[in-house]
Amino acid sequence: MVEFKDIHKKFGKNEVLSGINLKIQKGKTTAILGPNGSGKTTLIKILLGMNHANSGEILVNNTSIRNNWSYRKNMDYLPQIANFPGNIKVKEIIAMMKDLRQQTARDKELTAYFELKPYLNTNLSHLSGGYKQKVNLVLSLMFDSPFIILDEPTSGLDPLSLIKLKELLKKEQEQGKTILITSHIMSFVEEISDHISFILDGKVYFDGSIGELKSTTGKANFEYAIANLLKTNHA
Ligand SMILES: Nc1ncnc2c1ncn2[C@@H]1O[C@H](COP(=O)(O)OP(=O)(O)OP(=O)(O)O)[C@@H](O)[C@H]1O
Image: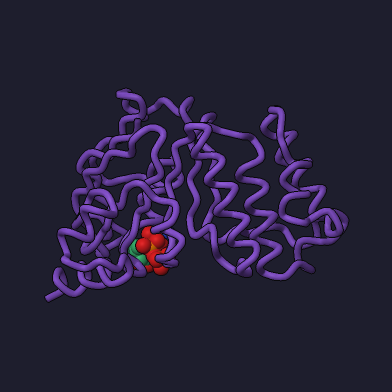
């Protein structure tokens, strides 16, 4: 469904991505993992047109995205850090997004699900980090798009909210949605991902299922398998 072909990206002298080749399969949940600063967010932003690659190509449904942004209509994105204007109320930001997209939205269902109803009249700057993230989740999931990109979706969530997020994502998976996530919470990744792509030193160091990762590294525990990948490749 999405294919990254030989993506290179530098910020000044900092070469972040040095030839990323990756396929995101339709209807699967792919986790892009890697240490801090390995370029996961940068790669996502390149897919969304928020950053530009120095070279390489991205295909969506076998068509290059160069000068062709229509695919974005089918993608929803949860940014790692949402910079909300603080003096806007929760209900106002939801209404603004709906106005911009002009699409049916399941905002009521999701605000109820994430227990945001008592906060609809609260200014965004007055919300706690976890509640801001819940608003962020409502905004990114309310249009029911077939492709969802979630950059650190668990950020700030308490254990109960984390379970709710996992259950919601499992329902999205049952509906055949394609999900791309990044997360440093390995238990979350293990529970919801079909496929792992591990980026290190600008390249894809591992690309396969969780089972393949465990057998490649000889570690039955997912967290240890990832740690092993990191140690082996940094040695
Ligand atoms: N706009 C920018 N200008 C300059 N450098 C940038 C910019 N955006 C990202 N970088 C650099 O690119 C590298 C990769 O950053 P990125 O945010 O993609 O990493 P990440 O894998 O998502 O990290 P984390 O796990 O910490 O969220 C970092 O060295 C970062 O400082």
